[in-house]
Image (tube, rainbow, N blue to C red; front, top):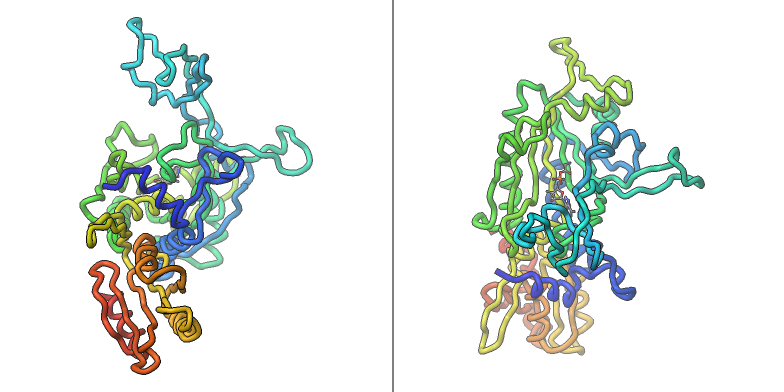
Length: 437
Ligand code: GAP
């Protein structure tokens, strides 16, 4: 498996991910997605959105503001409980999450020491992970607001609006993709734990008696989605939470974990959250968020099954899963073997020589209507193949001096490196067949 340093440097070299604000020395826990990374992210989000919203009749989408009324976070429990215990080193001033202080670094008297410098540590203090800001000109308690630490809470606060305008009958879901912010004490492992990230969340509302059925359904459905975007089954596992890990209101929770170079780690959580969230917002806002069932004339607060996955973590798992090194004619070849659905480019078009630029650009323009395409004329054909192997482009198409005569091009397969001569008027069909097989 690729190590994190190798992957991080490939991501920088090929334009997947850069450290944010690098020219100023960087800012810890923030990342910028480059031209290829942004395409990968978009494919992941599109695939999720299609499968969760567009292909289903029982789920609608939503796009809410990042800053919500601060009472939202009082109701959700984030103001009082969304914190990690933090410990500082009095000597080197480094900061740790309490669970990162290894007991083996303790002195003989049970006193824990700084793992970096052996210095004396402070007592653990609770540190709230929400970023704070002020809305308006005044910086006082009345204008205090938070950057959302998860996207789902405004799905709950908009529940009534969405349900009534979309005339939705239970069971139904509301989905959202968006940025979330957490002032993590120790962001780490590249884009795995950062301070700004994107979530894709679905809140699926159902009758409380049916929540177990839907919980099981969504665990399977979400696991299948990872397989559909090409994550290898052997690198994925389900980890149901033990009873003592569950929040008091949750009836069940299962993580989908991926085998990262630093161990099995959570990509997504699926949880049966009972009617807790809606009930909290009913209590705090005093507003009626009940559901009225026209058929049975019953009024009740629906239960919710939540699926919550990070876009950045999914991208990281795809990069790790896709990475391979091979030896070709005594040279190292690095390939990202992405599934065509999520590859940043599905095809790349090359002119064999600068003299063939015009017809090659025309061909690429035509193919762009059907596929995510790139045009590349820099360096030798061999270099261009290597470049596109490293960003995971499944097919490279070369327009050569013969193409004008035989109206055909050479198509090179990323994985087999086999080259086929294909008639230009058959290219779309040829590629579509390859992508669907
Ligand atoms: N609404 C439920 C919720 O937010 P969570 O387990 O805290 O649950 C869900 O977060 C997902 O969001 C995680 O499984 C992970 O993929 C992503 N995520 C959470 N914190 C993150 C961070 N600091 N950096 C990157 N992704 C993160």
